[in-house]
Length: 185
Image (cartoon, rainbow, N blue to C red; front, side, top):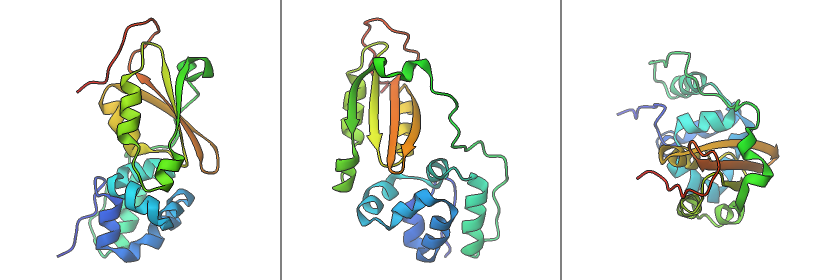
């Protein structure tokens, strides 16, 4: 039986089911070359969906899904028009350095094959109104950003250099003050 390829398919599941699609996926965007790193493959690929990967790679979700399906011999096509985009607009005022109260560099954790989700969520939970967490990563950690936004935080990120992405996160709707804002459960 053929495994479906959907926007919610985990990257690791895709590559376990269709190992021949690794080079196809990597060919779509330079960022996907990180899948060759066994540590990142064990950690990030297990939680990242194809929808999230499309955001990281700046690739149209429909283009990516349709190419993967075609190469896997699946005739069904995903409609164009998904809003997936890597354009995040101008840096918001709240992401300025003077609002950052804590900076976490998760690159060493990822190199060790550890996932920084619990550490990041704990740091986010300690933020007070108007405070911002700066996260330093080798790539845009879209799955982690998605979890944080689902828990009531907003995020903005920028790729400053190859393998240097800075993500700024704060409680949704923060406008300053000393009110302690905690993530939604």
